[in-house]
Length: 421
Ligand code: GDP
Ligand code: IMO
Ligand code: MG
Image (cartoon, rainbow, N blue to C red; front, side, top):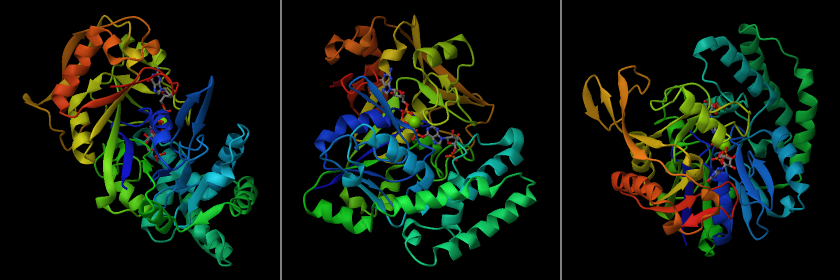
């Protein structure tokens, strides 16, 4: 048995939560491999909406084992809140949630350092989610981080004090005002709370499950254009969001990867700063934001909006080895007279579909192709052939350009609002 991967091909918020929830009935295990509570994965069923940040999106299926992998960074306070909220739905989190002992811990001071360094950057800030993601991954790479397994040892407090003393020096040098006493009690309580969960050596566990013939779905967070290596650096997150991240973030070999489901929205959005070639800072963009309810699931910030961008999509498909494409939010484009997509860039007069070193170079101009729009409520459609012909023409063009089949079309936020082609 092999591992399938689900990940985002744009700047995050492509609908990973919904799609993982839709695919979970076919899997025994869902495992998150990177990111942390910067993610906000929404799921809807039975008339209710749920947002998960760190817990994998298979948690609402009783049969499914959910693993938070070693590549994830965990904020104990945030995770506790998330677990307690999910438990109110009656789901048995304790039974199905497993946490890697090698996942790194987000400390209160990581969040403070995130806020301080963003404030220090001023107009050049990344626009981070302020969840402490970058400082925590910096400590991981800098070999001074604390891991979930450390919470159990009797050296925990000494290690904690040593890491925090470095953060305090940094915060003071940035003249950042804070009061640790506002944050530490909740942190230490959450640490005690988490100790009663299944904290395991997840690389052995997951490889044994694979050996036993269980089907594993690896769930990514963020999107390819926020990848630390291949995203629009430095306006990126601090982990590898691409398929390769599933190997290092779960401890599975590349040979175990089978399908790679790449999710893209029928248009584009981005939260935070950084280049966005097809951004529509106009009435069209406003309309996309309004119809698509484009406000961050984690921070509530308005998302920037724009047309679909094929050069970035092709790049993401190449990097991830996508085998199956999933298009979400197709319903949102209903009602536009004309729908556009960017099928190449002009860079200093030269037409190309390759991404330049600096995507935010002002000389990068998107070249658009226009399609007649469609209208009507797509959310009720369940057969691909019943979708408007103009929509299918748009999708046929996308497929012809990216050379990977689109196997699922999502036409609404609910589980049921899904068309398998
Ligand atoms: P994720 O981070 O990739 O899981 O995506 P988010 O949950 O942050 O953002 C996607 C938003 O779109 C959520 O509010 C979803 O409920 C919603 N959504 C997902 N798929 C569809 C769809 O096909 N149509 C519409 N209208 N909304 C969708
Ligand atoms: P999901 O999993 C959209 C963005 C932030 C910021 C940049 C760096 O829900 O798709 P960070 O807090 O990671 O240091 O912020 O990355 N960002 C996301 N944008 N969806 C996400 O996750 C994101 N996680 C981080 O807005 O621009
Ligand atoms: Mg999201």
